[in-house]
Image (tube, rainbow, N blue to C red; front, side, top):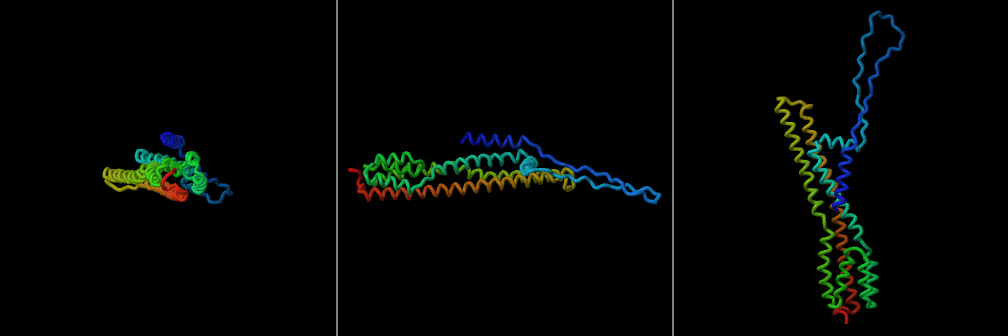
Length: 271
């Protein structure tokens, strides 16, 4: 996980520091008189051209970087760190949970055949070769098959709690980033408003150009904080639903294994 966080941080620093925002400005076109001379002896008045219009040739990527700089790096950087850190953990969790999902019906079919034939060593080997917490929990229960269904159930319950904790690993950090990002945005908002009012106090007058910088900081930090919280909230809800699905499948599979043991006469243990 440390490597993932470091890679995300390095990529963010490289992206924010490499390119500049470019602007294209259309030059003024002087008016040329191509018509034939008139009979008016007075000289023609000088024509006043329109002011040059700045045309921004800015991509979305450059626009985001410009907004980051305009919002003040000292206020925007902590929010960006929350995004990078939260995304690193979320991506690691998504990959881990995807690998932990298995076809429980196929696993139960193989275990039922092995248990029915009394091949518990083969059943343990199947659990060991199958990835995911479900197979791990069932395998731990089969190691206590000599103690009967009660012993198997106790082993399953104790190991299931450990596997559930491992599945929920990192969720508290994502939740922390979701809570902190808007707070950091509101902190930048307060600082921006203080800067704006301080400018008004010094100049003794309200001028839009004078207070625009502080108001821009206030708005941009708030927007970034809310956007980061919304992105991480989506990942958090997806990961939570994925964990609940895996835990539900694990519970159903363990109950099915206990029923298979009872149906094959192993309620009191192996003889």
